[in-house]
Image 1 (cartoon, rainbow, N blue to C red):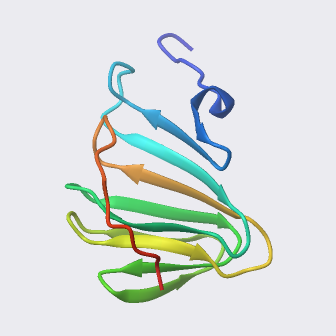
Image 2: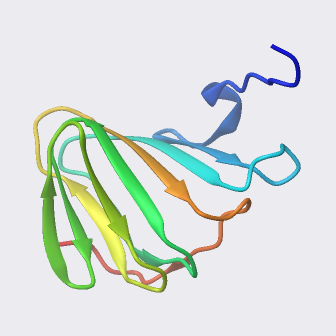
Length: 117
């Protein structure tokens, strides 16, 4: 396929549980996180100046969005508006496999140093 480029998650690891693709310089107007969050673990509350869309592929989790709990199971999604505090917690007994799409070609986030619900 002309112009297509393959990217390996292993090459984009930013932690033992997350890989980050930033579209800047790669012809994409989005950035994508792929996370595998172990049971009982969480991603703390943070904000972005743009929307973020979460797709839960495996596991069960609770997203905190503007102080409200949103329970998700496999094959469900939630969209978080810009400048809205959010984070998530694995509430199940298997790792969460989450893909989150950031509507910018570079990641911009501010951590709030709080746990999700």
